[in-house]
Image 1 (tube, rainbow, N blue to C red):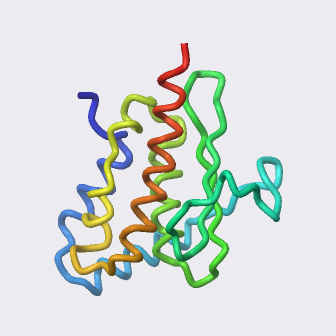
Image 2: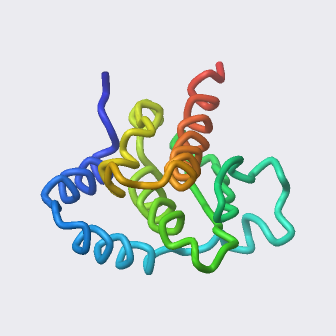
Length: 147
């Protein structure tokens, strides 16, 4: 098994040391500030429904753009301006999965949501964040299945 993309593993390791809820929240807010919406060269509003993350209360969208080296660039948008958790998750995935080997991206599972957001995350928020991850993993698996 190839393991997670190294940048994602770094994030997970960093969060593994955070036990205080307030510290976790501050760290996630700082990461959400790094969120960059999809550039207009990739997509403009209104977005195609095929890119919508089903089940995400913050109205997240995901695009996977092929790179010449066989990896993917991931782009995201979160339409709810208060969707800081979704923005943080998208920023983490963008920074750690864009350009990463597809075999590593394909191994990511939704349990990383609990490492980042804690076990007490609401069911709705947890589902939406997991679905953002699933969209990224699905895109990687699609490309891996191509001949």
